[in-house]
Amino acid sequence: QVQLQESGPGLVQPSQTLSLTCTFSGDSITSGGYYWGWIRQPPGKGLEWIGYIYQSGYTEYNPSLKSRVTISIDTSKNQFSVELYSVTAADTAVYYCARAPTIFGVSTWGQGTLVTVSS
Amino acid sequence: DIQMTQSPSTLSASVGDRVTITCRASQSISTSLAWYQQKPGRAPKLLIDRASALGRGVPSRFSGSGSGTEFTLTISSLQPDDFATYYCQQYNRLWAFGQGTKVDIQ
Image 1 (cartoon, each protein chain N blue to C red):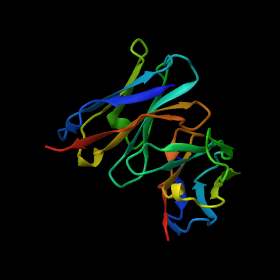
Image 2 (image 1 turned 180 degrees about the vertical axis):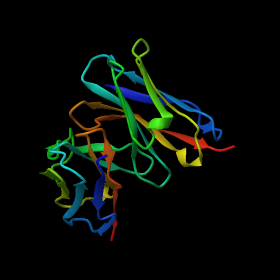
Image 3 (image 1 turned 60 degrees about the horizontal axis):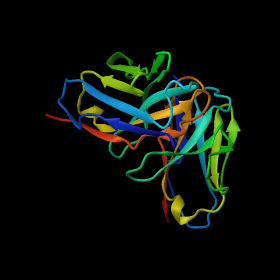
Image 4 (image 1 turned 90 degrees about the vertical axis):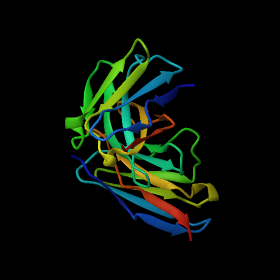
């Protein structure tokens, strides 16, 4: 059974960088045909797509976040990561990592991790 | 950017009711649309993919239809386990989610 698990700090200072890693288990991240994505959800609000990466390293980002985000992949560790720069309180959210076949919806989700931006 | 608009934002219904949620895309997305169910404190769960394909293990009371810019999610007979928030998502060009529809008890 494939699984995704987010890890990283639960508290980040304003103006600093939020960094999270997602570990994939149950198969190889290079098995092909999938986007590896990040989605967030502020408390009490809806889902917001952050971006995704393909195993080749090809990335796409939400235009509203593109100037502040980088997604990378480490195939040797079966992991992918997100960095969000210059965070503010508005970036406080549950962050989910996700896997989706390139022509389908998201079929595999991590459990989510709450990141709070506060001093 | 493709914008997704769901209606209504909140829906009050009773067990046994037929429920319909609408999702509109700002431009044509063919059938590149998924529906998700989310319960408090949980990750979303895929219900419907490619606009009308039932997800694995999803009860047959859920159905999806539409193409182009207008889509619907229908629950034929609402069950106690169905009170949740529902989201649509397009993946035709990048990804984008609707704002969600909360289905609560009337």
